[in-house]
Image 1 (cartoon, rainbow, N blue to C red):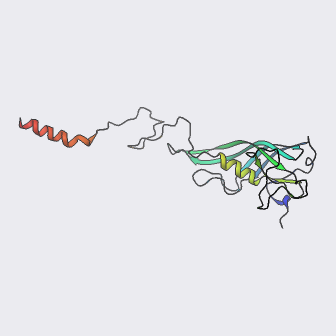
Image 2: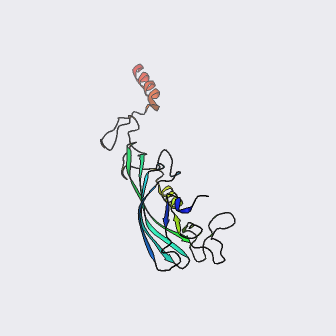
Image 3: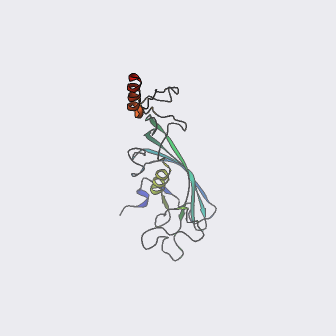
Length: 198
């Protein structure tokens, strides 16, 4: 059975666990777990993810507050230019201690129950069985996957491509085509024939 400390996403929190008011800073690089986005917009598995923040001990668990950054490679959905930049997300998550009855805070389905008094919308993640390690794998995956844009843009005011010829409208904003409405071309031809007979 794998040990919690052997996980590449494990952070030792034994020195602050179960002692309210203690704090432990984190400034480390972890490998990106699988399942963050897709081929269109996502973060490749194994890519360096930078996590900066701190674990603060409260009565019933640890609160992690920090920032997660990872490089994202995608393309603009308007002009199709490649986008390569760091994606940064602020995060707050709760790591509960074992429940008072000696069982951990998981329900019968293996999921983590919300601790009494905690907001149900708050992200909750388990500590290791002995409370000595916090595993950031799920936190990194959830935070980045939920924050990735559905329609990434190279810039907010990207003008996109010309629908007629595909020219980049960012480089030539005055670009346009004379569009002739040919729906009435047959009527115009008939009119010209009638006028010619007169």
